[in-house]
Length: 310
Image 1: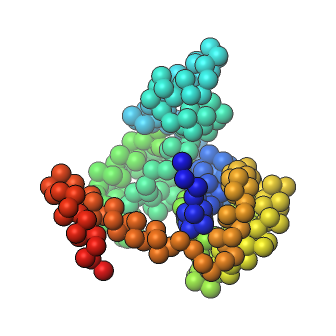
Image 2: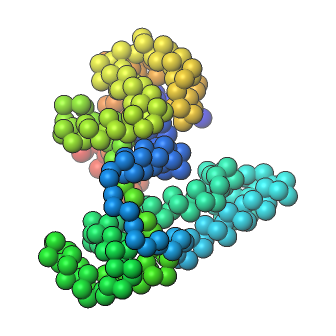
Image 3: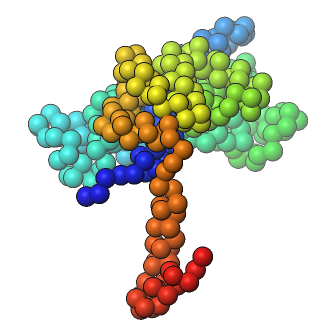
């Protein structure tokens, strides 16, 4: 098995860094973000409700039921002494998925899956609908509410309002909660240069950092590592690895350990101006020609095309 070149060692580091270290998984950091969002929402003055809404229950959708059954299967096999690899083969799942269902509570998995659903056209008007529902003691009609929110800019159908009103009466409507940015958005705010962010994005990133210290630490280390890659300061790589191993979040400590496996090659790739990039480009060109001609041409024609093309 051939040894990887400097380019292969360094190429994709930023992508892997983004995925493993800054791909902030929802079930890891959503709790602290949700707590701060709920505190800010709860600090706003609100009129006391005249009617107590029924207790909220998650709708029994296909995704919710699949998570319930999958969590039960994983926990049953773990209790029986099965390894993660054996459970993954038995349930036809990735080992990361099995580990997540083993280490995460069911309520947290259900809440995470429920919050990842895309927001509908009715989402901005739900606070008004819920307030009107409680003020009228549940006696307001869906048609009247539809006319009221249409004057406020709603462009959806009347049926959507009636469906939400029925869910309020049955207790299946989710409570209106403050918006939490997705992990993809947070990662984009961290990885992009500071000068390219708008004032609103910088403010949202500051709120996220204040809500979750792990994200703050991940942001500082990510920008330090980006500076190493862009300015070829590979001599500081070992120092950055030690900092990550001391107090960085767990995914970033794993990435630091990955860099230690071939420290000399990665350091050279982050320092020297020479690389095997030209050779790798020719290899990619040869592979492209080979795949385009596979099953339709001979080796002689392939050799001719490789030698004649610039």
